[in-house]
Image 1 (cartoon, rainbow, N blue to C red):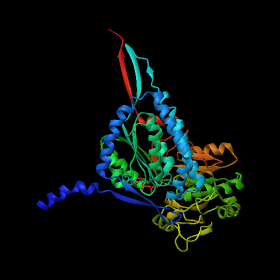
Image 2: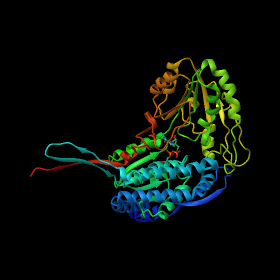
Image 3: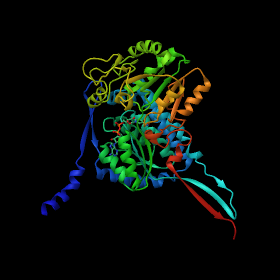
Image 4: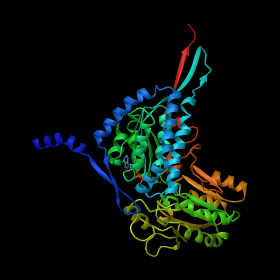
Length: 471
Ligand code: NAD
């Protein structure tokens, strides 16, 4: 009995012990820096500070909120190279891509800086009075961010949530916290009031879980694996907490015989090997109309072998390493001895979590390389016979995030685009994410949409007010 009591008394101190996480450079395997991990009680304290700060933030006038977000964007813009260098060191992203990602944070902030002054309600005709709607902020919003695109994904939740008058607590992934921490500092330098944006590095099961469980957090925006997303949705259900989920993908790149096959083959590697395939939108299943399969493969091989894989700090590098040794092992498990490797790209020797671009063909449609999200530079190529089969193959997955359609026939492009069950499609292109258009998944790829002109709907509640005019 007494031992039990003593253990209970000690628990708060043990829970508070600051733990450190050492960030590793994935290209060198060398430590970059150690980052203090927030505990459960520290997360609770941050939530209390956020709730208090939000009361004042929601009352900042729309014009001033917009101005502060523009200053925040300007601070990010002035630190693009620094942020990019942090992402190169901490995540192994090629420096050109990392600069683009930091630029996206600036652009998303600028886009939503215009929103506070446009958060317009409705005036609805009613008898006996005036009826108006208000878009009220939710309160404290928890953002749980994955390791694959630490900067853009942070900004997609952060910017519209702040614009709508919410306070934000962002939990970066344990492996990649450095840019989020710096962005939090830049927000303060830009003049954002303290605690309106807090960045809390830590474990998913501690900080993330607390954000989900704490009743004062009114919304969770989670981007990550479908498995963890399902747990988060269940956790949010206990409080009827609002939730946006951006989860996994296994998207199809459908190439019809009437397409520009040269362009389709030249661009296909970049649609899957970008960020070393650690991309929820990766077109990791290439489906090719049978009549042009041989020609497509002939053209794909030099395109794959031509990808510049190497030191992410070097200008011109197109693909860096995977995030960790454990993830490389996971990716490699999809290419066992005897796997049908059609051809490989290159990868450096020596330290670093390298994995070469890998093309598997022919692959059975029940092979786990074909059915599961690999999240690495491995793509399958599968032939199809006609439009109906192409759509059926594309849809034969629990996911539905992105995809591409290559064809010279406009009618077919529209028919197939309407037939494929996925949130983001591109025709004769592989673009997925523009911050001014909506982004999100069908089926188990997610719930809700981010970005675009309607993003503030996901960070506000509609309040209807009737005012009687009759005495
Ligand atoms: P993950 O699910 O392991 O982790 C994501 C985040 O959740 C991390 O911050 C992690 O610490 C946290 N977390 C883990 N367990 C938690 C818990 N019990 N409670 C609360 N938070 C918890 O995913 P990952 O490996 O970091 O990212 C890769 C996955 O993310 C892939 O499946 C990828 O497809 C997906 N993703 C989706 C999108 C999209 O927009 N749909 C974008 C990027 C990545």
